[in-house]
Image (cartoon, rainbow, N blue to C red; front, side, top):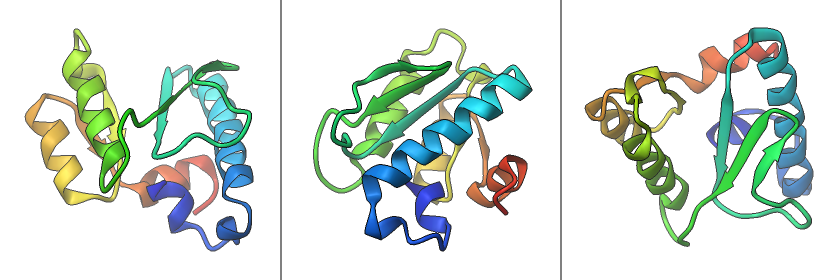
Length: 119
């Protein structure tokens, strides 16, 4: 949601559509870059199941509340057998510190958005 919220594209008028649109962008990024991509959202849009969506793994926070997706991202990094191979895209300093402490690297939302062609 950091990435969606950083864009002035009227996402608030159709948050479910914004999520679907980001997943489509990430599919193109994954295909062109060869990187495995996982995205975690705070809430589930109508009709979008968790799992593989054309090469992008979509996950949702298990709990509700403040920083729910952040906690899920940390849980996934902790569970990864090679956290050093994980890059987390976030503008949240606390989340960045938490995943770095686990061995993951961090890229800013702005930098990643530029790589997607949205910046």
